[in-house]
Length: 301
Image (cartoon, rainbow, N blue to C red; front, side, top):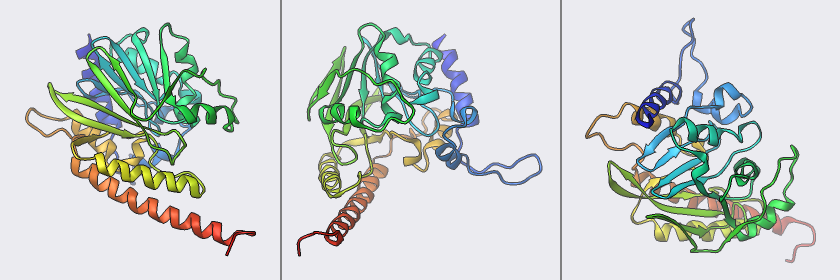
Protein backbone atom coordinates (compact mmCIF):
# COMPACT_ATOMS: atom_id res chain seq x y z
CA UNK A 1 0.00 0.00 0.00
CA UNK A 2 2.82 2.44 0.92
CA UNK A 3 4.64 1.78 -2.39
CA UNK A 4 1.49 2.47 -4.41
CA UNK A 5 0.80 5.62 -2.40
CA UNK A 6 4.31 6.90 -2.98
CA UNK A 7 4.17 6.12 -6.68
CA UNK A 8 0.98 8.16 -7.02
CA UNK A 9 2.40 10.97 -4.89
CA UNK A 10 5.53 11.06 -7.04
CA UNK A 11 3.49 11.37 -10.22
CA UNK A 12 1.38 14.18 -8.72
CA UNK A 13 4.46 15.94 -7.41
CA UNK A 14 6.05 15.67 -10.83
CA UNK A 15 2.98 17.14 -12.49
CA UNK A 16 2.47 19.92 -9.97
CA UNK A 17 5.95 20.54 -8.65
CA UNK A 18 7.81 22.05 -11.56
CA UNK A 19 9.16 25.54 -11.21
CA UNK A 20 9.47 25.94 -15.00
CA UNK A 21 7.28 28.45 -16.86
CA UNK A 22 4.05 27.02 -18.31
CA UNK A 23 1.85 28.07 -21.22
CA UNK A 24 -1.92 28.29 -21.12
CA UNK A 25 -4.44 27.03 -23.70
CA UNK A 26 -3.93 30.16 -25.78
CA UNK A 27 -0.18 29.64 -25.82
CA UNK A 28 0.52 32.51 -23.42
CA UNK A 29 3.22 31.97 -20.85
CA UNK A 30 1.86 31.67 -17.30
CA UNK A 31 3.66 33.03 -14.24
CA UNK A 32 6.49 30.91 -12.90
CA UNK A 33 4.89 28.42 -10.56
CA UNK A 34 7.67 28.59 -7.99
CA UNK A 35 7.13 32.34 -7.72
CA UNK A 36 3.38 31.84 -7.32
CA UNK A 37 3.94 29.27 -4.58
CA UNK A 38 6.01 31.81 -2.70
CA UNK A 39 3.59 34.71 -3.00
CA UNK A 40 0.07 33.23 -3.26
CA UNK A 41 0.10 31.93 0.28
CA UNK A 42 -3.69 31.90 0.65
CA UNK A 43 -4.34 30.01 -2.60
CA UNK A 44 -5.28 26.66 -1.07
CA UNK A 45 -5.64 24.81 -4.37
CA UNK A 46 -2.15 25.89 -5.40
CA UNK A 47 -0.48 25.50 -2.01
CA UNK A 48 -1.71 22.02 -1.10
CA UNK A 49 0.90 20.02 -2.99
CA UNK A 50 0.93 16.25 -2.67
CA UNK A 51 3.35 14.81 -0.10
CA UNK A 52 6.39 13.10 -1.54
CA UNK A 53 9.38 10.99 -0.61
CA UNK A 54 12.82 12.62 -0.84
CA UNK A 55 15.02 9.98 0.82
CA UNK A 56 14.37 6.54 2.28
CA UNK A 57 13.62 8.17 5.63
CA UNK A 58 12.67 11.75 4.72
CA UNK A 59 9.39 13.01 3.24
CA UNK A 60 7.95 16.43 2.42
CA UNK A 61 4.53 17.05 3.98
CA UNK A 62 4.45 20.83 3.75
CA UNK A 63 2.77 23.27 1.40
CA UNK A 64 4.12 25.33 -1.45
CA UNK A 65 5.47 28.29 0.50
CA UNK A 66 6.54 26.73 3.80
CA UNK A 67 7.88 23.31 4.65
CA UNK A 68 7.07 20.50 7.01
CA UNK A 69 9.29 17.42 6.91
CA UNK A 70 8.83 13.88 8.18
CA UNK A 71 11.72 11.72 9.37
CA UNK A 72 10.81 8.06 9.68
CA UNK A 73 12.58 5.74 12.12
CA UNK A 74 12.25 2.14 13.26
CA UNK A 75 10.55 3.35 16.46
CA UNK A 76 8.21 6.08 15.21
CA UNK A 77 8.08 9.42 13.43
CA UNK A 78 9.78 12.79 13.87
CA UNK A 79 8.07 15.82 12.35
CA UNK A 80 9.89 19.08 11.63
CA UNK A 81 7.66 22.20 11.66
CA UNK A 82 3.88 22.29 11.56
CA UNK A 83 2.59 25.14 9.34
CA UNK A 84 -0.17 27.63 10.16
CA UNK A 85 -3.74 28.75 9.55
CA UNK A 86 -5.64 26.78 6.92
CA UNK A 87 -2.69 24.42 6.50
CA UNK A 88 -2.30 23.01 10.01
CA UNK A 89 -3.93 19.72 8.91
CA UNK A 90 -1.60 19.36 5.91
CA UNK A 91 1.23 17.47 7.68
CA UNK A 92 -1.17 14.98 9.29
CA UNK A 93 -3.04 14.46 6.04
CA UNK A 94 0.25 14.04 4.19
CA UNK A 95 1.51 11.48 6.70
CA UNK A 96 -1.66 9.44 6.18
CA UNK A 97 -1.45 9.71 2.38
CA UNK A 98 2.09 8.38 2.52
CA UNK A 99 0.85 5.32 4.39
CA UNK A 100 2.08 6.21 7.87
CA UNK A 101 0.06 6.61 11.06
CA UNK A 102 0.12 10.07 12.73
CA UNK A 103 -0.35 8.27 16.05
CA UNK A 104 3.29 7.19 15.67
CA UNK A 105 4.61 10.78 15.83
CA UNK A 106 6.92 10.82 18.84
CA UNK A 107 8.71 14.16 18.43
CA UNK A 108 8.01 17.47 16.73
CA UNK A 109 11.03 19.71 16.15
CA UNK A 110 10.13 23.38 15.75
CA UNK A 111 12.96 25.16 13.95
CA UNK A 112 11.96 28.58 15.35
CA UNK A 113 8.98 30.28 16.94
CA UNK A 114 7.45 32.08 13.92
CA UNK A 115 3.85 31.01 13.53
CA UNK A 116 4.16 29.71 9.98
CA UNK A 117 6.32 26.97 11.54
CA UNK A 118 4.67 26.49 14.94
CA UNK A 119 0.93 27.17 14.75
CA UNK A 120 0.01 23.60 13.87
CA UNK A 121 1.92 22.21 16.83
CA UNK A 122 -0.88 22.68 19.38
CA UNK A 123 -3.12 20.34 17.41
CA UNK A 124 -0.39 17.69 17.08
CA UNK A 125 0.44 18.06 20.76
CA UNK A 126 -2.97 16.57 21.51
CA UNK A 127 -1.81 13.21 20.16
CA UNK A 128 -0.74 10.81 22.91
CA UNK A 129 2.96 10.71 23.68
CA UNK A 130 4.10 13.53 21.40
CA UNK A 131 6.98 15.72 22.63
CA UNK A 132 7.68 19.17 21.18
CA UNK A 133 11.24 20.53 20.98
CA UNK A 134 12.20 24.14 20.30
CA UNK A 135 15.09 26.41 21.22
CA UNK A 136 14.85 27.53 24.84
CA UNK A 137 14.76 31.26 24.03
CA UNK A 138 12.13 30.74 21.34
CA UNK A 139 9.61 29.22 23.76
CA UNK A 140 9.64 32.54 25.60
CA UNK A 141 9.54 34.55 22.36
CA UNK A 142 6.53 32.58 21.10
CA UNK A 143 4.36 33.82 23.97
CA UNK A 144 5.22 37.45 23.13
CA UNK A 145 4.98 37.22 19.34
CA UNK A 146 2.20 39.03 17.44
CA UNK A 147 -0.63 36.63 16.73
CA UNK A 148 -3.11 38.51 14.53
CA UNK A 149 -5.05 35.39 13.57
CA UNK A 150 -5.29 34.11 17.16
CA UNK A 151 -3.51 30.87 16.34
CA UNK A 152 -3.61 28.36 19.18
CA UNK A 153 -0.13 28.09 20.67
CA UNK A 154 1.52 24.87 21.84
CA UNK A 155 2.39 24.30 25.49
CA UNK A 156 6.04 24.69 26.42
CA UNK A 157 7.84 21.37 26.30
CA UNK A 158 11.47 20.43 25.51
CA UNK A 159 13.69 23.53 25.68
CA UNK A 160 16.61 22.74 23.39
CA UNK A 161 20.15 23.71 24.35
CA UNK A 162 22.97 23.81 21.83
CA UNK A 163 24.20 20.30 21.05
CA UNK A 164 21.16 18.46 22.39
CA UNK A 165 20.13 15.31 20.59
CA UNK A 166 16.86 13.51 19.97
CA UNK A 167 17.16 9.76 19.59
CA UNK A 168 14.33 7.56 18.38
CA UNK A 169 15.20 3.94 17.73
CA UNK A 170 18.37 3.86 15.65
CA UNK A 171 18.00 7.49 14.53
CA UNK A 172 19.72 10.39 16.27
CA UNK A 173 19.11 14.02 15.34
CA UNK A 174 21.58 16.62 16.61
CA UNK A 175 20.25 20.12 17.29
CA UNK A 176 22.41 23.24 17.10
CA UNK A 177 21.19 26.59 18.45
CA UNK A 178 21.97 29.08 15.69
CA UNK A 179 20.43 32.40 16.66
CA UNK A 180 19.96 35.42 14.46
CA UNK A 181 16.72 34.78 12.64
CA UNK A 182 15.22 34.28 16.09
CA UNK A 183 17.12 33.93 19.37
CA UNK A 184 16.69 30.16 19.53
CA UNK A 185 16.69 29.13 15.86
CA UNK A 186 17.73 25.50 15.43
CA UNK A 187 20.01 23.76 13.00
CA UNK A 188 18.83 20.18 12.44
CA UNK A 189 21.66 17.75 11.69
CA UNK A 190 20.78 14.17 10.75
CA UNK A 191 21.42 11.27 8.39
CA UNK A 192 19.29 10.48 5.37
CA UNK A 193 19.49 7.38 3.21
CA UNK A 194 19.14 6.78 -0.51
CA UNK A 195 18.70 3.07 -1.26
CA UNK A 196 20.45 2.48 2.04
CA UNK A 197 23.42 4.77 1.33
CA UNK A 198 23.87 7.38 4.10
CA UNK A 199 24.23 11.12 3.57
CA UNK A 200 24.57 13.89 6.12
CA UNK A 201 21.63 16.30 5.88
CA UNK A 202 21.36 19.74 7.45
CA UNK A 203 18.50 22.18 7.91
CA UNK A 204 19.27 25.77 8.95
CA UNK A 205 16.03 26.76 10.61
CA UNK A 206 16.30 30.49 9.98
CA UNK A 207 18.42 31.48 7.02
CA UNK A 208 17.96 35.26 7.25
CA UNK A 209 18.83 37.69 10.05
CA UNK A 210 16.12 39.30 12.11
CA UNK A 211 15.91 43.06 12.66
CA UNK A 212 18.49 44.96 14.67
CA UNK A 213 22.18 44.81 15.43
CA UNK A 214 22.00 42.02 18.00
CA UNK A 215 20.18 39.70 15.61
CA UNK A 216 22.67 40.55 12.85
CA UNK A 217 25.60 39.77 15.13
CA UNK A 218 24.02 36.47 16.17
CA UNK A 219 23.40 35.58 12.54
CA UNK A 220 27.01 36.31 11.56
CA UNK A 221 28.21 34.02 14.37
CA UNK A 222 25.75 31.29 13.37
CA UNK A 223 26.73 31.29 9.70
CA UNK A 224 30.39 31.17 10.70
CA UNK A 225 29.64 28.14 12.87
CA UNK A 226 27.89 26.36 10.02
CA UNK A 227 30.83 27.11 7.75
CA UNK A 228 33.13 25.42 10.26
CA UNK A 229 30.94 22.30 10.39
CA UNK A 230 29.94 22.09 6.72
CA UNK A 231 32.50 19.48 5.65
CA UNK A 232 30.53 16.29 5.20
CA UNK A 233 27.15 17.99 4.77
CA UNK A 234 25.76 16.60 1.54
CA UNK A 235 22.03 17.31 1.54
CA UNK A 236 20.47 20.72 2.13
CA UNK A 237 16.98 20.65 3.65
CA UNK A 238 15.15 23.99 3.54
CA UNK A 239 12.40 25.39 5.74
CA UNK A 240 10.89 27.21 2.75
CA UNK A 241 11.02 25.73 -0.75
CA UNK A 242 11.70 29.16 -2.26
CA UNK A 243 15.04 29.30 -0.41
CA UNK A 244 16.28 26.84 -3.02
CA UNK A 245 15.53 28.31 -6.49
CA UNK A 246 15.71 24.80 -7.96
CA UNK A 247 13.63 23.06 -5.30
CA UNK A 248 10.64 22.18 -7.48
CA UNK A 249 12.88 21.25 -10.38
CA UNK A 250 14.67 18.87 -8.04
CA UNK A 251 11.28 17.40 -7.11
CA UNK A 252 10.54 16.84 -10.81
CA UNK A 253 13.92 15.20 -11.38
CA UNK A 254 13.39 13.02 -8.33
CA UNK A 255 9.99 11.85 -9.60
CA UNK A 256 11.45 10.88 -13.00
CA UNK A 257 14.77 9.58 -11.66
CA UNK A 258 16.10 6.39 -13.20
CA UNK A 259 18.35 3.78 -11.56
CA UNK A 260 21.89 5.11 -11.45
CA UNK A 261 20.89 8.78 -11.74
CA UNK A 262 22.35 11.07 -9.07
CA UNK A 263 20.04 12.12 -6.27
CA UNK A 264 18.93 15.71 -7.02
CA UNK A 265 18.97 16.69 -3.34
CA UNK A 266 22.52 15.46 -2.70
CA UNK A 267 24.29 18.71 -3.55
CA UNK A 268 27.26 19.44 -1.24
CA UNK A 269 28.59 22.13 -3.59
CA UNK A 270 25.23 23.90 -3.52
CA UNK A 271 25.26 23.83 0.28
CA UNK A 272 28.73 25.37 0.44
CA UNK A 273 27.81 28.04 -2.11
CA UNK A 274 24.69 28.84 -0.09
CA UNK A 275 26.68 29.29 3.12
CA UNK A 276 29.14 31.57 1.30
CA UNK A 277 26.16 33.62 0.08
CA UNK A 278 24.75 33.79 3.61
CA UNK A 279 28.11 35.04 4.90
CA UNK A 280 27.91 37.97 2.47
CA UNK A 281 24.29 38.66 3.45
CA UNK A 282 25.16 38.47 7.14
CA UNK A 283 28.07 40.93 6.82
CA UNK A 284 25.94 43.36 4.82
CA UNK A 285 23.06 43.23 7.31
CA UNK A 286 25.44 43.81 10.21
CA UNK A 287 26.99 46.82 8.49
CA UNK A 288 23.51 48.22 7.81
CA UNK A 289 22.46 47.67 11.41
CA UNK A 290 25.58 49.42 12.71
CA UNK A 291 25.03 52.37 10.35
CA UNK A 292 21.40 52.68 11.39
CA UNK A 293 22.36 52.55 15.04
CA UNK A 294 25.04 55.20 14.55
CA UNK A 295 22.59 57.47 12.75
CA UNK A 296 19.86 57.17 15.35
CA UNK A 297 19.23 60.07 17.74
CA UNK A 298 21.20 59.82 20.96
CA UNK A 299 23.91 57.55 19.55
CA UNK A 300 27.39 58.09 20.93
CA UNK A 301 30.01 59.68 18.62
